[in-house]
Image 1 (cartoon, rainbow, N blue to C red):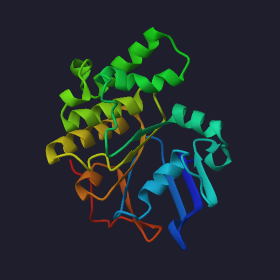
Image 2 (cartoon, rainbow, N blue to C red):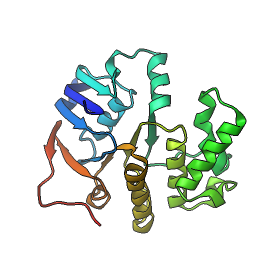
Image 3 (spheres, helix red, strand yellow):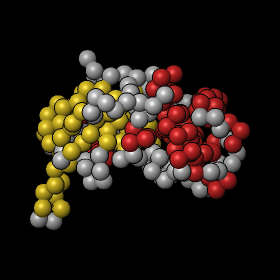
Image 4 (cartoon, helix red, strand yellow):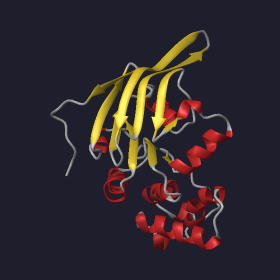
Length: 232
């Protein structure tokens, strides 16, 4: 059984008198440890798909499963608890708390779990080491570069050891050098830590770091042309 399974998933929103269907009968399989990239222009439904996978939203029709959990069946606090334990979300904006240090920003998700201060410390140190920022633990966001801020955001996303990372245009606000550093780090998370990653982007270069890529076009998934491939 695949780790992520979408079967005939449709999601429709109403904007005034108009119905918008960003996802229409979408079926998808993603395996454990895969770095899956979804390409498409703004408004194509990419973020909608991420929100379904993170149990932030629910499909109107079809089934979304992650692991052995039917996300559409989760209600209220169950969805929030499942998300906290299983999903790390990386946004286009790092969304760090400006008055907290890098260490404290990474620690925030752990306050949702019953664990000792020593265990929180151990996990935060591991996460900051994983993104190469242990020496910036006491720095505030304003003392970090844009690329470093995004790496702190990735550390925050992995500190609770989630099974799934979802990334929404994580390099959209970065220069090319910083973007490549962030993408290399995400690929390491997949290869070395066996994290399953689903990333959406409109940037072909960022997409090239993934192990598999598809395009979302008018609510439907289309495979990437066979000639396209990952960079070295």
